[in-house]
Amino acid sequence: MVECPAKREGRKLEMYFTYILRNNNTGRHYVGSTNNLERRIKEHNRGQTKSTRAADGWELLFKEGYLTSKDAKKREREIKSYKGGNLFKKLIGLQK
Image (cartoon, rainbow, N blue to C red; front, side, top):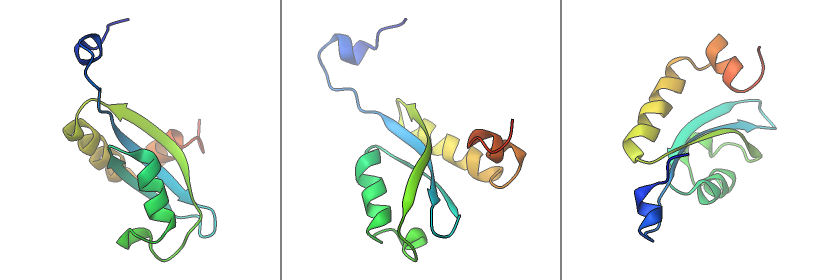
């Protein structure tokens, strides 16, 4: 296992996440990225995000951690490019 230099030097390591939510009421999915996953899910469920405002009941299905915002956003774009297809279904466990 490789130790992160920031952790070794006593600095706080900031993680960025790419995530997929599912709305339990509508069955819709949402793909996003953030540096604070817990806060972001709460914002989705409070209607504070324009694209998910219409319904509450968002549940975390999938997350991946990254060391940079750039990498998390890159992965978000990649997942969105195959949303709804077989790769997306495989990612969220609907297909083997």
